[in-house]
Amino acid sequence: MTTPFVTGPDHPACGICPATRLPREGFVVYDRPSRECPFNPADGHRYTADGTPACVHPDKVGLTPDRIAPPPQPLDSAPAPARRQRWWRTGR
Image 1 (cartoon, helix red, strand yellow):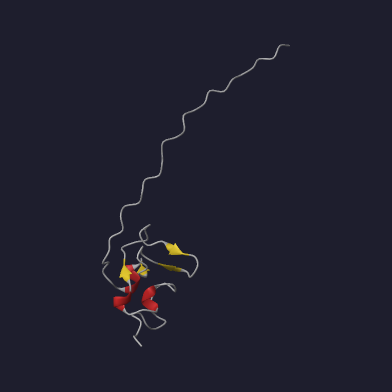
Image 2 (cartoon, helix red, strand yellow; image 1 turned 90 degrees about the horizontal axis):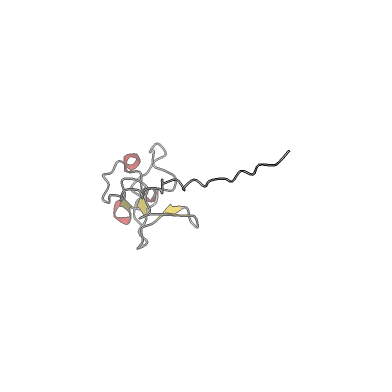
């Protein structure tokens, strides 16, 4: 059996981090969360597209990222065009 990379209760690694259950060669490290390693709600872990477990907090496990997450996609910040409202005047 192999020893997990992170051991001991004093380490600041997240509870779901693969470093707490796998040796260093068993997971990849991203510089931050991204769409390339989405959270899997079925088991509570992050994986790459090929199924490799992923850590997204390198500072907590004391590692240099071996993968750089792409920049976040910009939100559609263009406001919808304003619609003119029709005002009806009622006679008195």
